[in-house]
Length: 422
Ligand SMILES: Cc1cc2nc3c(=O)[nH]c(=O)nc-3n(C[C@H](O)[C@H](O)[C@H](O)COP(=O)(O)OP(=O)(O)OC[C@H]3O[C@@H](n4cnc5c(N)ncnc54)[C@H](O)[C@@H]3O)c2cc1C
Ligand code: FES
Image 1: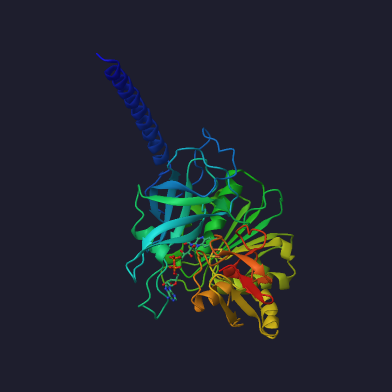
Image 2: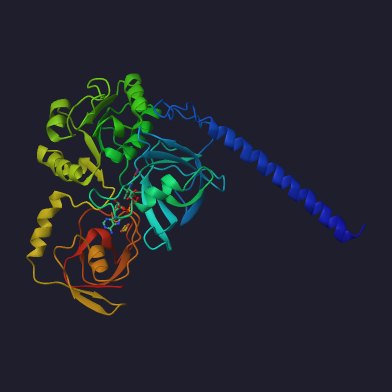
């Protein structure tokens, strides 16, 4: 036998051993993950508590750029199968970093544009919907349809991709958890969580975290939906409220179905509004966390301040562009200012600012300036652009970290003449 043949045999044996070890690890991880599927009933208590005591979190605070994850499990959460949870495991098998309950993940997705049939990349954010676990992330995605009366428009690109394309075993690129909307863990004030529609997802993460860690924090949840068709994690939330004296559940249906029973399926036949909060909350010092559709945010956040809640005790997240009415005053003041010129230095265009535009991103797009964008809500950082001269005003606090001398176009407007590196 030659030395080369011997070396090849040794290499082959080593490779075979590596493959066997990897298969054993993969098999174990699969079995561990299957333990999470406590029940096939989508409404049963499935995610509390999750046994992860044997594993620990990664010591780092995150990772740079995008990391590959695979879908290990999908689970519909509502009667109409329009809201689906995705359980994601890192492909590298390494433990995940701890995140703060309420934070979100940013995804880069490769899709085919339904109108042009051309492949393209989109970026979207989804809140983590469970308490932090060292071995998986869970997000819960609502399918977004074309707006009412506009059937010619394509449905939501990312949500359709998640629902229709991402099957068990599919892979996705994910940025590390981020976001400034999260449970303030060091402050032990009672907390009031207000989740409208799919805005319940970060609240689920906060509730699971507080109750799993057996924190004594008093938690009120006001969950606003139209009716039982949209009600997700119903059995879980009811079981938690039964099991924990410090968790107070208020489910509000604004348009209950005939089969929905007040006092059983829901507590209040109304939207979540200020009069309900005033009627059901004792006068105390609370921290409020709000996430929901634009009209709910625009009425509740300023409403809480008018009620006397300190703005430092109100935390909110919007899942899309939202201009809270407390900021609208500033905007109308700006529109009476002298004309503002926006210069796009790389394209060589100089255009008069349109005060009716909601953001610099909208303005740039309307003038055929190519801009990268994703969430359009100040969360993903895709539209970050260098400011070469001038200043901007933000419609809301940026969630993404912004580099010095840059701005997020999707949530900003010019304060004065502006030159952007576009
Ligand atoms: C921090 C953060 C956390 C979030 N967490 C969650 C979460 O937990 N769960 C969740 O489900 N979502 C969440 N979202 C929202 C999510 O990121 C997406 O915005 C949502 O899924 C819609 O994206 P899409 O690609 O499906 O829709 P898009 O493709 O962005 O379309 C949105 C709407 O526009 C319509 N439309 C398409 N073309 C046009 C046109 N030419 N003119 C007018 N309208 C048009 C579509 O029909 C659709 O109704 C979060 C967002 C943020 C910023
Ligand atoms: S598009 Fe996401 S931060 Fe502007």
